Length: 284
Image (cartoon, rainbow, N blue to C red; front, side, top):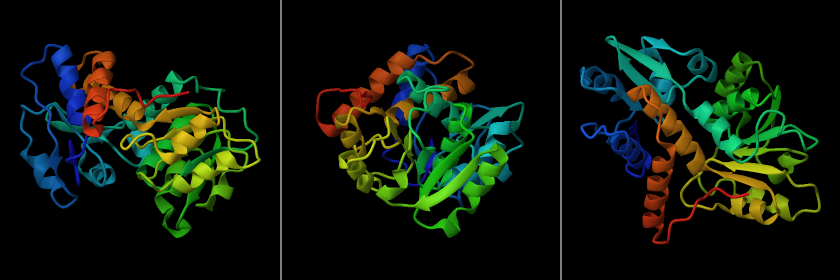
């Protein structure tokens, strides 16, 4: 697992649980601090005993010119979170998008199920995860989305991804009023950044019936708590982390991922970090 910073990552726990359940006792997965400048050399150092790498920010875009081949989804989204070493080549994949779709599906938000509101789905944030969210919405049958961003002038990568995905986007200010009529909110911003949107669930307007907050620690976020109390479907970032990791396990091992064992291990680690009894961050 590569990124900067990376010490907090839960991915090593999830992958270790998967390898243990699959009987791959000789496999190892660890967090490695690596920034953009260090990525080329690290990739060059990976020998034939390496199966693959997971990438988090800021490396998902940096890795693209260093790949030999990439699946079409990587090109469309503009980012790869997985590198597989095969036949002396570096192959790029994106498991964030199917991870989002599966996380939503677990909570009953699937194709045709995002249309109970009057307005488009709303994405909070305009970075790499927001681009993945656009692709997930496309897979859910959406053709447009609103995106709340702080600095519209920095939304170039998002606009380009939307064009490649065939998605129409409307930029809105990063403020609670941007949520008017949204049938689904997907928050892709760091912990605390979406707190101001919690107030929409106390307003005298129709609330979004579903909220997906990609934060997994600390959990629940203020947005998730307010949405849950208002009766909305709430999907947490742990579900995304779990399912994108499961996709990586399958790419790296060629076997079906033991999602149940991975979930149990991840929740136990989150509970340990919080000093509480294990409790799923998934809620309806």
